Image 1 (cartoon, rainbow, N blue to C red):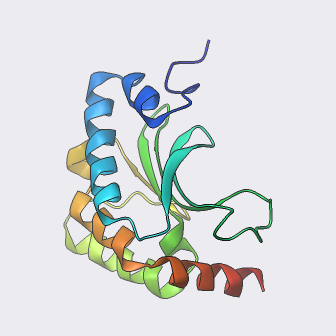
Image 2: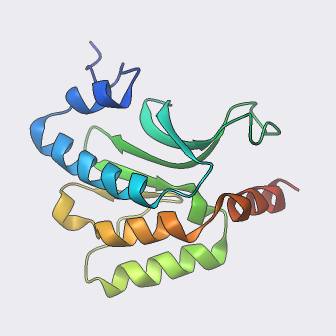
Length: 149
């Protein structure tokens, strides 16, 4: 049986379906993302996560005909994750992020675009905000075009 978070249609439903400790952590990261979100990126639910996307009205020419995912936030089975597609598509941004993360003294657990954490204390939340603010919508679309040709 799916949890309320897994079937949520709104961000508020998603948050209310999480256990208390995860709700507090996800809400803190969400607040940081929203405070630093570039103009033109919108918050919604997509792919079972809190998603920050480029609306199709702004950029309809996507490979899958769905809005481009700029970033996302999720509570997975064994961890929480922040997905940073804004840095994933640009090697220079990715290197900056990894170096800055390591400088915080916190252990980096990162896949291609996701930063995994089990508690909010493991995540440098301010750095997540900096990473979100660092790439404008126009820069992000430029990265996308360069990657997709």
